[in-house]
Image 1 (tube, rainbow, N blue to C red):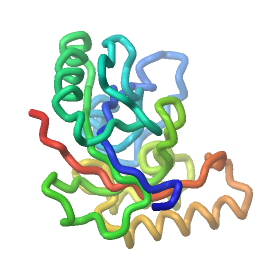
Image 2 (cartoon, helix red, strand yellow):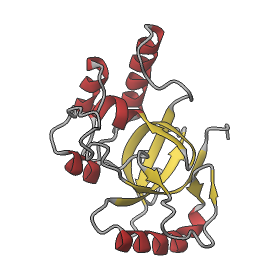
Image 3 (cartoon, one colour):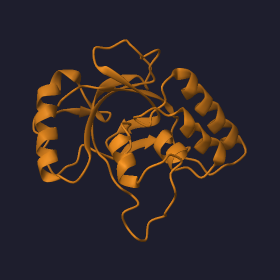
Image 4 (cartoon, rainbow, N blue to C red):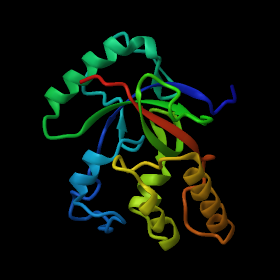
Length: 192
């Protein structure tokens, strides 16, 4: 495995960055209110592993918990949902820098995010920030490729997004460039 390849469970509290009056109000490239989009989006963007509930025995490495901790993660998600009844609390299984993730799992494949997931505090979704809420028309046009979970359905779509970003970065576009972006396969671990 490369340094980018890893797999595990991720708990995300979706944040409505547009709730505050002083925030930058940017219209999304897809139809829906900000809260509707937070409910639909299933990628890596948000507050990871909120600290309002003790992680207990859950061990987080590079932002994710190992799959064998599913029962502890499920209990943690339940506590978070009780603390934040009006928030979207999501648990997903991620595999960073995958190859052909569609159909290779017992969990339901939701799609691909594109960005980075290095740690609890170092995470970024190009799909969310540059496609759904982006400012460049070419990237926003990729929204037509997004599925119901606001993720890219195929690696071909990920490659198209990667190429478009690289072209924009070469032309000095103002895009996130601190970390290398990779495909992130997202699955529903069905915690119910």
